[in-house]
Each structure stands twice: as C-alpha cells, then as structure tokens.
Picture 1: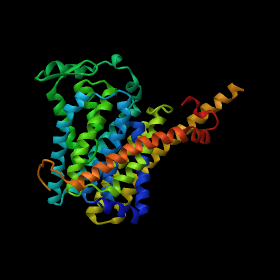
Picture 2: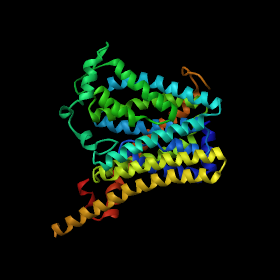
Picture 3: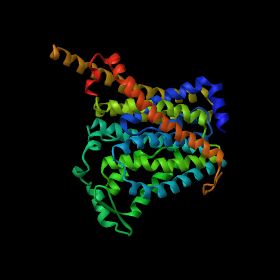
Picture 4: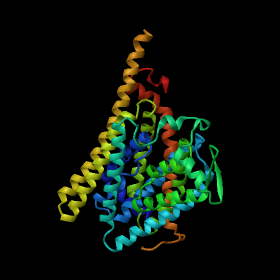
Amino acid sequence: MLASSIDSIVSSPELAVLFVGFGLVVGVLFGFFGMGGSFLVTPALLMMGYPAPVAVGSGMAFVFGTAVIASLKHHDLGQVDYKLGGIMIVGTTVGIEVGRASVYYLESLGLAGGVISVAYVLLLGGIGAMVTREALNGDGGGGVDHEAADKDLGDYEIPEIARTIQETVRIPPMVTLRGDVRVSAWIITAVAFATGVLSGFLGVGGGFIRMPAMIYAIGVPVPVAVGTDLFEIVFSGGIGSYLYGQGGGVDLAIVAPLLFGSALGARIGSAATAIVDSDGIKVYFGGMLLAGAIAVGIGEVGTYLGIELLETAGLVLVLGAAVVVAGAIVYTTLASLRATQRRQTPAAD
Amino acid sequence: MPGVEIPTWDPQTALIIGSILVEAIVLYVGYGGLEQVVGPRLMELLVGSDASAGQ
C-alpha cells in the first residue's frame, strides 16, 4: 500500500503539487483561526470524485498529522491537561468508530456521498452563519480567542454555564482538572463521544465543537482546551485513521502532500496572529465557510443531475474561497509589517 | 466494512499511519529549523531591513 501511494505521487506530480498548495492554504487558515483545518479537505476530495470512505478516511489521517504537529507545540507551551485528554480519548475513540461504521453502512446502501455532503452543507452553513453574524456584531466570532489563549491560567474565570453544570451533575467519579476545575468524568465522556461521532462521520477534527464544549460544558481554561483538544485528537484521530486505513480508506498520496503544505502554512498563519487582529478577518472566514456550504450543495446537485460543470464549479468555489481568505491573511500581515517598518524608519532617523 | 469494530493488528495499515506520524514529526522539526535559519532573511526580503527585530 505504501509503495503504491509513492507510485501515485510520482506518476501524478500535478496532483501532488495541487495537494501541497491546498495544504498550504488550509494550514494558513488553521494556524490563524485555530480551526477549519479539515473543514474543506473532505468536501473537496468528495467533489474530486474520491469515494466517501477515502475522502473521510484521508481527511481524518490529515487531521491526525496536523494534530501531532500542533500538540508538539502546545506541549512545549505547557498547555495540555493529560488527565482530561486521557479521559476524552476513550469517549472520542468510541464515537469515531460509531461514525466510521455509519459511513461504511451508508456506503453499502450507496448513500454515503450524498448524506455526508448534506451534513457538510448544514455544518459549514451553520458555523459560517454564526461566525459571520458574530464578526459583524463585533463579538469576535468563532475560532480561538488568541488574547484569552495567552492569559495566565490563574486569571481564567469559569463560565457561568460550566459552573452550573459542575454543581448540578455530580455523578461519580469526580475528577479535578488543571485550573482547579472539578467535574464528573461522565460529562467529559459524553462531550468526547458526541464530538467523536461527528469526527468519525465527517473526517474532521471536531475542535470547532469540542473546544467550546470543553470551555462551556466542562469549564476548562481556553489555552488548556486548545492544547488538550489537539493532544487527544492525536490518539483518537490516529486510531480512527487506522480503522479507516484497514478498509483502504487512507490514501497516502493525498495525505502526505497535504500535510507537507499545511505544516508550513500553519507556521505562517500562527505567526500572523501576532501581527494582525483576527477579528477584522473573521467575517471573511465566515464568508468562506458559507461559500463552502454553497459549493458542496452545487457539487451535490451536479452529481445528482450528472452535470460535470456544476461539480467543477463547486470544487473551484471551495478552493477559491479558501485561497482568497488565506491570501487576505498573508497580504494583511505583510502590509501591517511594512507600515510598522515605515513608521519606525523616520523615528530612527 | 459496516458495523462497529475493534482494531486488529494490520502491519500494512500500521506502516501507513506510522509514516504519517513520522512525516509530521520531521515536518515539525524541519520547518522549525528552517524558520530559524531562513526566517529573518526572508522577512528582511519581504518587509525591509530590521523587520525581524521584533519577532
């Protein structure tokens, strides 16, 4: 299987370059917004004509590789709660397996591609609308709050809803987490299982739901939620990828070039957060997710009606929207740096 | 492969997942080193002199 993947890369270098470029774009978005790393990979693969288990399985393996890189960084920053991660791994892994089994069941009925596409339209549309609305209202929108992520754990205040859940649901065993959070292990397992099902079904990391769930349902400080989420995806995503791989669902000719590009892109995106205020760009991110939802819808209608032009239009829209937003991040960062440089130069004179 | 499964040992699949893990670690270390070596010069080229001073 490994040799055939290498052969595929060698025999089709154009495709490998396309995946590296797409990975670069996805990496910039992930590094900058802290989410969205896999939102676009699985739908794009589906629109390129890959079977649903390969699109979802390869998407998940890509998430696994991305999580390894990101959690190494968060480990260095001391932002991983290994006890919380350990409890979550069990729930997420079982959830992923339930999601994966559903994909293969739907595939056996010939419905997997259609159902997954519809789920993506709802998911991308819903999150895109939420991020756009909150960005327009000036609430910051989705993704990681970088200022909150940089705060000291001692300064962190547990959200009211998390405090209520902690005081109401006291089913033993109770566990104490970093930031002095005491919560029932069952709440952690339930959150992990629900997001695991979503991961296994759609091939996404699920951080966009798991992180808010960890913050608002469990009461974990933001930096620990980010680091622990990535740490547990390393294990649950690794096991999920392995299970998909056993069914031939992981194509290294897709994953290896995607990861090659995204690891570089994530560094660029992450560095840009120190220079550019993400709130100004979040509205474009929301727009990109909405464009992604429309693109998947167009592609699915094209597949249903057998119109290849619509399928191609959907794919171009997904890739185009991602390229525009990633380009806006890089352009704004360089423009900010140049403006700072110009201001400093006369002062120095 | 419908139905919930317990993972069983499959060397071929383990090799694929293992190679993704190795690639990820190599990329983390490799790009990190590259950033330190090439980063300041690249920033100078893109933004102008002393751009990397605040980095």
